[in-house]
Length: 89
Image 1 (cartoon, helix red, strand yellow):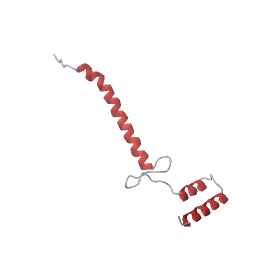
Image 2: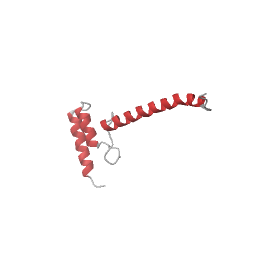
Image 3: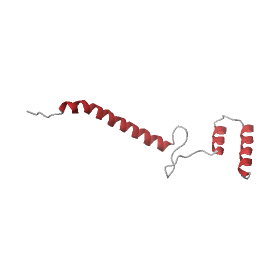
Image 4: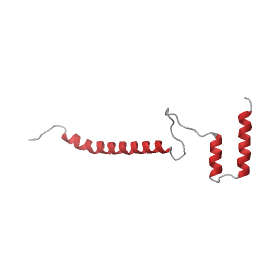
């Protein structure tokens, strides 16, 4: 009665399937929340799925705003970036 060949295989496979489903759900939640918040590095994905990269000016602004660099360093770096951008290649 209730005999089904291969029952032991499903008993061994069921926990693995459960672990895989839980891992998939965790991965999906992390992927969705990480992409929506832009991630820890401040970078996210654009409309086309391309990764957004900060410009040198944005990096400089962020470093100045966080207090990582002082006003003189910020002004000098901004001037250098402006000169580099305006120079012909």
